[in-house]
Image (cartoon, rainbow over all chains, first blue to last red; front, side, top):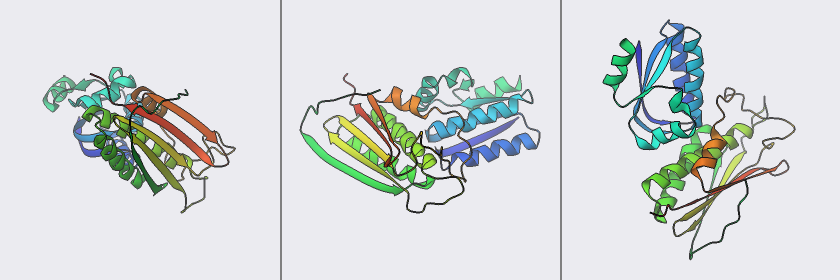
Length: 102
Length: 150
């Protein structure tokens, strides 16, 4: 399991960095990934797209991506797009890592 | 989705920003739009919604403004913000090939768009959206957000 802690904004400019981090993890054999969005101020469809792409990659290895987020403005984005049903979302990193470890 | 609206109160003015159609400038437009929205009394949540919509529209402009294999250093995204008390109307225009232009354009530096939630988000977060796809002058997206009434 790996924890990817993001901070700042995840948009068309910064999302490629998240994408390559996810690709690197999969390449090195890590398929169970916790993406911590607690320190993220902003995310849009570029970020969502990268997360969906990452999920497809880990799922082909029977892995998973779970998210940490408790900010309402970001949770709203996941709800509107229905991605809150695709990614398990936990309020804290502790909760997320406990669930994944099981 | 089309919409006509009536300016309901005294107009505050218009803020216009033109940036290169490059990824790193989308954040600049978000900051301007967020400030402008806050200045006409939008709530924190409304401002956040507007910034997402603006980001999506500008991202589309950046993604679509390039012909594959070519660089267009003078491609721009023009954003015009009409401001009224509690209302922001955003007009995003790129000078490119159009969303359904004869050449579906992508920047060679950007990967194929994954997801495609952009217009969904704009449609849900904004009170009205209008997509004007004119291949000659580029693509124009207009949307409007009204301060939520408690």
